[in-house]
Amino acid sequence: MLAERLYGKQDVIDAALVCLLAGGHLLIEDVPGVGKTTLATGLADVLGLDFGRIQFTSDLLPGDILGLSIHDPARAGFVFRPGPIFHSLVMADEINRANPRTQSAMLEAMAEGRVTVDGETRALAQPFHVIATQNPADQTGTFVLPDSQMDRFLMCISIGYPPPEAERRLLAGALPERGVSTSAAAIDLAACQDDVREVRLAPPLLDYLLALLAASRDTSLFVAGLSPRAGIALRRAAQAQAWLAGRDHVRPADVQAVLGPVVDHRLVLAPAHTDKRPSEVLLAHVALT
Image 1 (cartoon, helix red, strand yellow):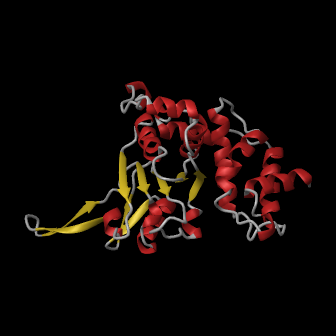
Image 2: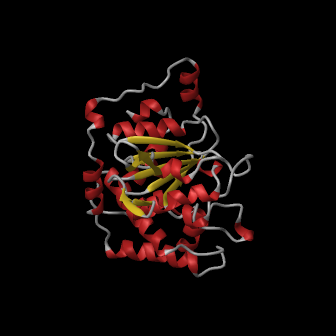
Image 3: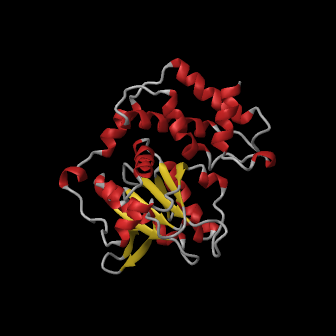
């Protein structure tokens, strides 16, 4: 199971599962070596998804991601060779090391579930999810992801360093197992996502979501407010959080549990409040109004 691969990080595993159950893409911002790849490959195994990995570098080209049409003398024509984007779960490793032109090649795929190559639109696998990793912005050789691309990630999380007991196990040589059981790999993600969409939101809960969105837009706390897309992302994540907890309805606690991963990479705080996380400021403001 995933908990055996990523010691002491059940909260991170749960957040990643919530993101995929909600049908979204996940961004992991953290330093190298804390388990980002382990989490991505583990999710692919547990959910039985076809996995592809793209190592983003400064010389990566859009064709390296999407694929190319190559001349085939035997057929006297061009044959399309699909790139690694044509997998159910794609790990975009160190996505901010690639230049903006190459990063933009991911945008249509993440937004529309399809890509356009040589003037022809090609559908991607369904379900289709991207788990991207990003190095800290102050590291050399990185490019800042544009806001339009950041907004395509339903959630953004960090793994962080392992707790002492988990790191002790790693240092003692208790390395995670690569394999998973057949039963675990047989989980039907698409069916689970259908169930998540059926989780109910009562009118007072919708009012709570609307209050959070309005508070992000109608105050001077933030440079710009949350978009309608962000509101939909928050609803979907809250539904997945409730479903994972075994409930058929969303509670305010579900919204609060996913608020940080959903909005912190979308909201920019005004200078006077930069000592806090945007989600903390937003929750405090709604609680006071």
